[in-house]
Image (cartoon, rainbow, N blue to C red; front, side):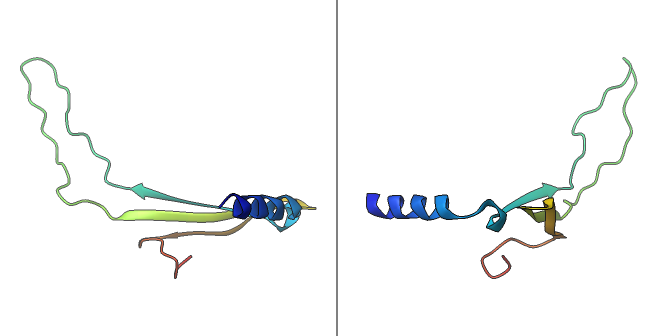
Length: 87
C-alpha cells in the first residue's frame, strides 16, 4: 500500500501545473422559506408557504491554470445527480 502512495505522489509531482484541471461540484436546494415569522403583539402573521419542495440544482465547473492565466472551463448546471457516467 505504501509503495502505491509513493508512486502516486511521485507521478503527481511530475505533472506540470498547466496540465492540471481543478474540478468542483456543488448542489443547491432552492427550497428556502421561513418556518417562523414575527408580528406585533396581538397580531397574527398571514402568509403563504410553499408546500412542495423545489428541485435540487447542481453546478459543476473546471478551472485551468495556463500560460495565459486562469480560465474557467465546462461550467454547467443541471438537475440530476452526478454519477461517473455524467462526469
